[in-house]
Image 1: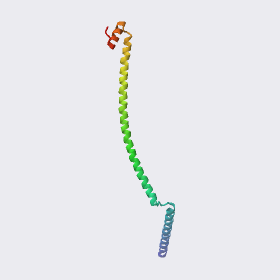
Image 2 (image 1 turned 135 degrees about the vertical axis):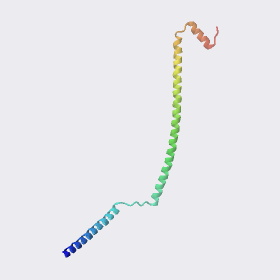
Image 3 (image 1 turned 120 degrees about the vertical axis):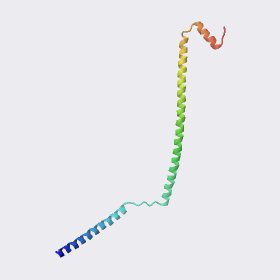
Image 4 (image 1 turned 180 degrees about the vertical axis):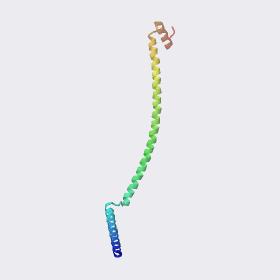
Length: 127
């Protein structure tokens, strides 16, 4: 039995080494396959300079965009002021229109003497 246990232990040791070697070989093969399939990025100095140049250009454009956004804000403020002014003028126009409409309607009720007096007062004519 002792000899049988010793054979089992030797067999298990050989089996463990065999499994270990198989796993090691699979890992090495996997590493090489991975290294060949995944490209490495090696940029030349020329490409790095172009990328830096483009990044600088992008930064410049972002600054210009910020400036334009500020201009847009100021224009919107001016537009709001002009819109308020236009609304005020429309309101005044409506009031004046109603006032003169009432005056025109009231002229229909004037007698000849009232009309004569109205024009005399208006044009400074005294009779």
